[in-house]
Length: 305
Image 1 (cartoon, rainbow, N blue to C red):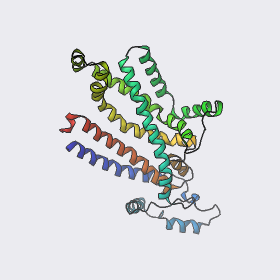
Image 2: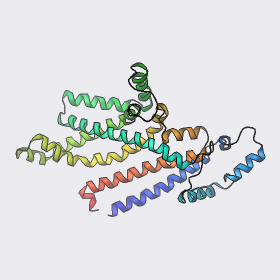
Image 3: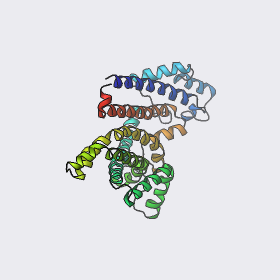
Image 4: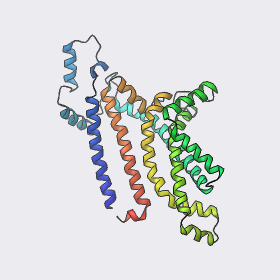
């Protein structure tokens, strides 16, 4: 379909421009990248030789094309701080981020969608008011503050859960819930809005007049029509989870890609910071692309475009 093809081309262009922006931002951000590898006692000759070795003396656009060429050939490079293989870091820490992200993503829709449906079915009731008050509060609380508060309450005070670590189920609970909280709130509001819009349609009154039970009307017909905006929301939630993972993984000591990226930036380990920034940007862009395709497939009118 033309729409999907156009969105695919647009996604490729965004990925290319994002890679250029990330590369230039890290290379021009200031600071001494050699400090991550060479001791303070290194002579100017040693520093110049190392700069030549890793290509820092070349023009930035030459460095960019050289870096992209190595990436396409499968050479991800090594860390400047400990010479560790970036491909090994990607496998080890990527697995941890995938576990945390998948758990948070599952919580967003496992909790947000049922609460949104319940709020819509019980609209203008105490149940609806309570659910919507929760969603407003969850959206208002900053992610980092919620993380610190949860550590203080559930780890330090009540001692129900560990405050940090990886990767047992008990260690996963706090970071996954904190990471999912704003997504749950937004999903509740989106689901409720979509359900109410469809509950007021003429086909619902026709189905009720035909004698269908309210459970079947809501569960089979109304919810299916309300899926389109929820599917569209899914891609945005992936991007939100990726962005907030930087904060959550750092606070909870979860050894994922976000924590690696933060440490690399602080240590001026630009090969690691550069690659994992590109990974996170790529995940966000591709998730939006997949959401757009899902939206197109779910909407019969767009499938004909």
